[in-house]
Image 1: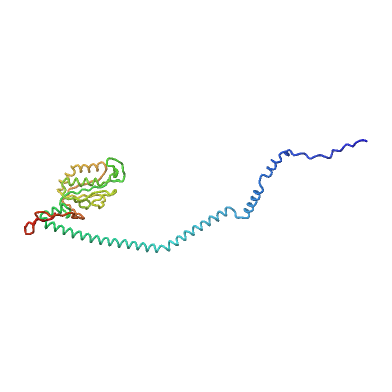
Image 2: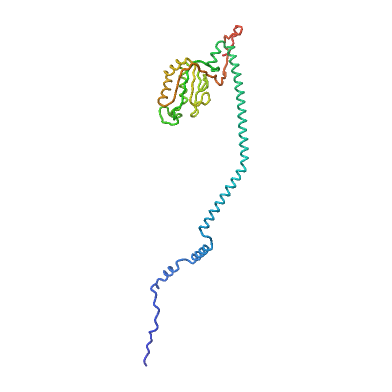
Length: 307
């Protein structure tokens, strides 16, 4: 009995995939995005479609910011307008207080000046009564009376552009080498005039006495604690032409000439037929003692006196 051979013409097996051995890598490539990320991206896309465009939202935010800023400015202006009358009233009150205080200070100063004049008058009378013929000389030396006579007028002024500094022999820890007149310069000028024969000296109307001081306060020059401003006008009583010549030939006069030549300090000196010096602003008698040999009005010697 013959065996029938199986028919294989219609039973083909499906061909295997070339990447069948790389199923894990294939799965990773096909599903590279996690499901959670995909869902989030879908929700965001859906919200973008339903929401406002991004540019429109930015414009609305800017508009809201501008409205808020305008509101703040408006409120501030309103508050300033409301408080303006109060500030104006306070300012007027402050001005009134200042004016009142200034007036009171002026009144007190007038009283002080009147009292000082009365004291000076009594002092001069006492000097005339007990000092005899020395009263006028003592008043002149003390600077308590006005002086008029021939003399010199010396004007000392800062150089042009004196604010600049270049450094040099005048420079120290307190002063810079500029064309500005310093207190020590004025001191040398005054001492040179005294040495040249001046009988009385005043600087910018400030009468100098044996107790006077010329100092500096920053860049300002003080004479008896009174600030002066340039130009500095120095008046000296004495033989005008002779005093002028003697001063210019002295060491202090040469020092002033060096300031003029090297630093541009402006100076001008002239002999005057008449100059007037005011009395010292304040003269205080610090000490007094009896003087032997003082005479009474009737000529009798009492053995007492003042000086």
